[in-house]
Image (tube, rainbow, N blue to C red):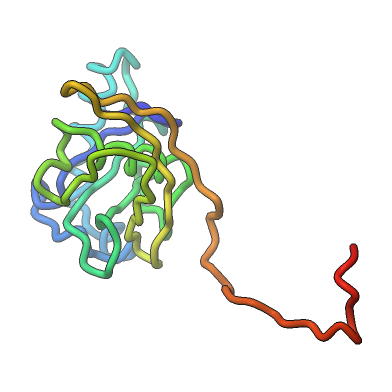
Length: 172
């Protein structure tokens, strides 16, 4: 369990017999997965001190798997009874923080950096989202300082435009 922006229950996709690369549509159609996931989410909510969460949307649920498309890790985020088609901002912050925290279910799924800040690239059903996570590790202690996003939509363009001085004088 993690509580960074939103309480979450996070598991390895393989623990549920999944690859972690399934589409949101395929996951939503997987009644067996939801039948196994929901009791875990409800029990974790109680253990987190949230009481009976069976009718609550929190805690959210997330799955992790090794990255396969150039990101840091593959993720799936649930709201909780439906897979998010991309990634919620709060889910991204929680999942990115989890993957950097030693002793979590992310152990063995990636090579963690020794210090922050770092950009964690979460692969989700529709692409990727970047999360900037700042943390410190000293004397074996891990301290999460912050987790944030610059954008939530896909990048449209990147580059430089060279405007002639006859069009723009560079002022204003």
